[in-house]
Amino acid sequence: MAKLGKRLTSAYKTVDNLKAYDLDEAIAVLKAAPKAKFDETVEIVMGLNVDPRQADQMIRGVVGLPNGTGKTVRVAVFAKGPKAEEAKKAGADVVGAEDLMETVLKGTIEFDRCIATPDMMGVVGRLGKVLGPRGLMPNPKLGTVTMDVANAVKAVKAGQVEYRVEAAGQIHAGVGKVSFTEAQIKENILTFAQAVLKAKPASVKGTYLKRVALSTTQGVGVKVSVSNLASLASGN
Image (tube, rainbow, N blue to C red; front, side, top):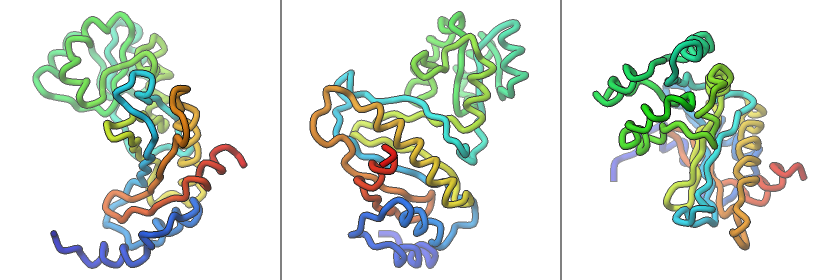
C-alpha cells in the first residue's frame, strides 16, 4: 500500500469513518480538511437499490446546479447553417458537421459535452463506438439532441450536470468546488439529490437510497446520513 502524504494523513484524522454525518456537518468536515494545492471538486456518490441491467432501472438524467459546477465545460455542437451560428454565439467551443465527425474519428476529442441538431444524428451515429463509451453521445432524453442549440449550450455552460447509474448501482457526480461556500455546496447537493430521488423507478421496492458519501478530488470520503439527506431533499 502506498504511503500517505502528510496532508492526506492529517485529513483522515478529521473524519470518523464509522459515523454517518448530517449533511451540514459533512460539508463542514470537507471544508475544514487540509487542502490540496488546487481547487478540488466536491464529489457525491449515491448508492441505489437498482439493477442497471433492467431497462427501466437504468437511471440517467441531467440537472442544473443553482451555483454551477465551478468547472469550465467544453461543448461541441454538431450543426449546420444558422444553427451552427447560433451555437457559436451561445459559446460552443467546437462547432461542425462532417468535418467535426472526421476530427473525432481521428481521435481528437476536445470537448466534455456534445449537442446535436436532429438532422445531424445520421452523422453523429457513426461516432457511436467512439463517443458512447465516453458518455458523450447526444441523447434527446437529456436535451442534447435539439433544435434549440443556443439554450442547450448555455445550460451546459451554466452548470448542468449529467448523471448515470453505474454497473454497481452507484451514481457519481461533481457538485461544486471546495472554494464554494458551505451554503452553495449544500444547495447544489440538495438539487442533485432531489433529481436522483425523483428518478426512482416504479419497479423498485423497498429502500431506494442505500448510502451516500461526499469527498474531494484528493481528499477523504465522508459518509452522509441517508435519512438526513432524504429529509432535506424532500423539504422536511
